[in-house]
Length: 285
Image (tube, rainbow, N blue to C red; front, side, top):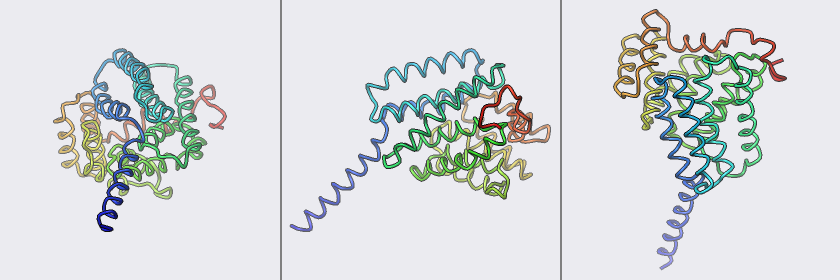
């Protein structure tokens, strides 16, 4: 009898822990994120105006519905606001002249997310909150050496925290691969570590959008390592997902000219350029 009671106590305890783990955010928010992680790849091949209107429409609809579904409204609002803002910023980055205002929006959301994390340290959090917060910080610190020094390791730490929460979160492995590629070896970066993270992403990617990014990352780290045959093989895997060709055709053109997509993104971001004085804020000085 005692054994049966102990058995049911263990089962009940396990069930409760699983329930609490899955209830950190609502199924509604989880679904919106996972759907958009793939849909955003399709948007890469869309015209910018269509992308802008679609992103804003999806954001407004999701936030309007959120109060009816949220398990933790404040955390889920941060996640959804970040999800759509990041994609809007990605499309607007090189198609508008208002870089200062765009960066200010990123900074405002970044501060909101970090404040939530710092003020709720003893509460359960979704890996997506850490992941998207890291993305926001990474976007904000681009082209600012002082901001990079101030926030660079927080980016890495947040991606690592995301994986600590969910060891199969391919998106965070991919972003850690990107971080290591651009970070110097003395700071814990380097191509060898980047390759390892991209390999981890390949193993656990299930969402089509995550597979797409994992294939690209693994392809281009191999291109950097002079393994052009494997680079082409995994670029073809990304093409086979049928999520759009605009970025993939661009990558193929870059590779044909002798440089990787990583280098293209570095050049496009302006990370090696000095930020204009009128774009700087107090953390860029």
